[in-house]
Each structure stands twice: as C-alpha cells, then as structure tokens.
Length: 332
Ligand SMILES: Cc1cc2nc3c(=O)[nH]c(=O)nc-3n(C[C@H](O)[C@H](O)[C@H](O)COP(=O)(O)OP(=O)(O)OC[C@H]3O[C@@H](n4cnc5c(N)ncnc54)[C@H](O)[C@@H]3O)c2cc1C
Ligand code: SF4
View: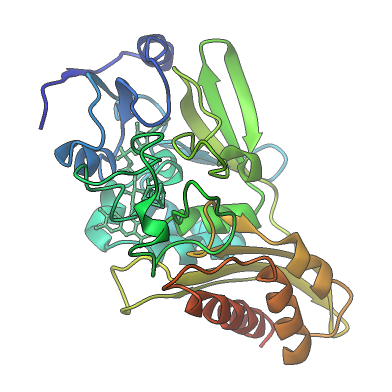
C-alpha cells in the first residue's frame, strides 16, 4: 500500500475543514474519510484508491440511533450495520432495513461497516478493482472492458455506453424504499439530500458516483415516520445463501386495505447502476388487487427498460421473479 497520513480530527467541523482541501470527493480523491474501512482499505490495498490523507471519523459523535420529534428515525453516520439491524425500533417499524442489512456481507463485516460507508461502497466490477485493466470509472476515458467482457453480475438498468457497473449495496435498496434522507455537513454548511438523488447514473461520467463535494461529511440519515400498517420485505437472490452480493433483490413497503394495494414503495438491487426505485411498478400496483397476476405485471413494468449485456440477460427474469415473490411474501 502507498504511504499516507492518518489524522483524527477532534470534531466534525475539523473533519470537514481537513477534507475540504481535497481535489474531489469522487474517484481519485486525495483525501478520504475512513469509518469501518471495509471498502476503503480493500481498495487502498489494490491501489484503486490512493489518498494522501485518511481522516478517521470513528471518534466523532455520530454513532447514535434516535427517534426524531416527528416520529421518524435519525441514524448516525458511524452506526454499525449490526447495531442498526438489531435496533428494536428498526426491527419493529423499518423491518425492510433490518432484513436488508442482515442479508449483506458477513457478521464480522457488519460489525465494522457503517451507515455512511455502506452508502458509499464501490462497485464489485472486476475491472474496476484491477488496475492492470482499463476502466472508465477508475480511470476516465480508458474504456469499459465489461461491455464486451465479464458482465454476468453487472447492471441491466441505468447503464450507459461508458459504464454498466452495479451498485452493490443491500442497505441502500431498503433506504430507497423507505424514502430516507442523507444529511451532509460541508464547507458551505449543512444540506439534506433525498436518497433517490444521492447516487448518480453513470452517463458519460461514471467516476462521479454521488453528489458529494470535497469536504462533505455524511453526519446522519433520517427515515420518515413509519407507514402505519405497512408490510415490509427485502428479498435477495444470489449465487450462494450467504456472504454474497445480490444478483437481484427487491425491497417492498406496502399497505393493503380491502384486498387492494393502497400505498407501495418498490426498490430493486443487483440490477441497477444505482439503488433502483421503480415508480413503474408502484403505479402498476396501487389500487390493484393483491394477486400474483398483478404482481407479475408490476414486476415486468419495473424491468421494461432493462438493457442486457452478453452474460446477464438472465437477470431480467430473475429480478422480475424476485419482485413478484417479494410482493407475494408481503401480502401472504
Ligand atoms: C467481502 C465483502 C463482502 C460484502 N458483501 C456485501 C453485501 O453482500 N451487501 C452489501 O450491501 N455490502 C457488502 N459489502 C460491503 C460493505 O457493506 C461495505 O464495505 C461497508 O458497508 C462500508 O462501510 P465502512 O464503514 O466499512 O466504509 P469505509 O470503508 O470506511 O468507507 C467507504 C467510503 O465511504 C466514505 N465515508 C465513510 N464514512 C463517511 C462519511 N460519514 N461521510 C463521507 N464519506 C464517508 C469513505 O471515505 C470511503 O470512500 C461487502 C464487503 C466485503 C469486503
Ligand atoms: S462497468 Fe464501469 S466499473 Fe466496470 S469496467 Fe466498465 S467502466 Fe469500469
């Protein structure tokens, strides 16, 4: 690993000031925060990330889970994935988030991984992680070998001619279905970003993955008050039963009255270049009876714009079945 300076700021303002000197908050950043380190240190060992300065945020007071005055939930940036998954309020009111977290990685990794770090984890595309290969995301303008190469696990929604990498997070998919808000403290002050606006599509700039700018520190995430009577499911399909990323996943938050769907939020994982909300599936479900035919129609709507690559066309049917089954589980 290359040499770097390691700093421990006294408070969030000092952390932001230190990081504000960075050239970018995107790929190639010369300054990085570190939380659990389970993404960053991996990529530093591979020379995919080569920051000159690493700012340890683990001593900052960002590790609390609190109910907000409006009845929602405030989740600190350094809350560990394990603590969040097992928090009684999360298990009771935001079950889809608990399920998604527990479907991710391994127990040891979840003990280290944090809320903000999970939001900012990087793609598992093999070319991105191999500095001997070209990759537009890691090294803009060098090309995307995945399009003609190994792409079985990569995305079918939101892709571009420049990048087809999948966003690998489970937690983010649940947060999209829960309509979370990301709170950032930056050099210009604080701001709140809806999770759906936080991650960027690759377009012609796949090295830009989020709206973060130099110095931006995620301080916490908020969830709106729980939807009364909602049924919540996270279903993850993968090559083996645990310790594996999603080939396809679905997060569903759904309310039913009189046998009909009255409100629903749908998000997909494993198939999109960002955690994928599906307004198409939601529109196809609201007002409809809770039966398999309507669930299948909605799932097909979610995948209608999918663009398969040479090895991953199977994901379209897999994700369709995944969402159909998640809806069945939520209404069983
Ligand atoms: C073997 C393996 C298997 C995995 N399997 C899964 C899986 O199945 N599903 C899944 O969802 N994930 C999986 N993961 C990914 C894992 O969830 C992430 O690595 C983890 O969530 C990252 O959190 P962290 O705190 O360790 O991040 P770090 O590595 O500390 O940081 C990641 C990035 O976030 C930035 N950052 C951290 N905190 C902040 C902040 N507060 N403000 C601004 N920037 C910040 C860092 O600068 C860095 O760029 C796996 C990881 C590994 C290594
Ligand atoms: S899919 Fe994206 S991350 Fe993978 S090689 Fe292409 S540009 Fe790089």
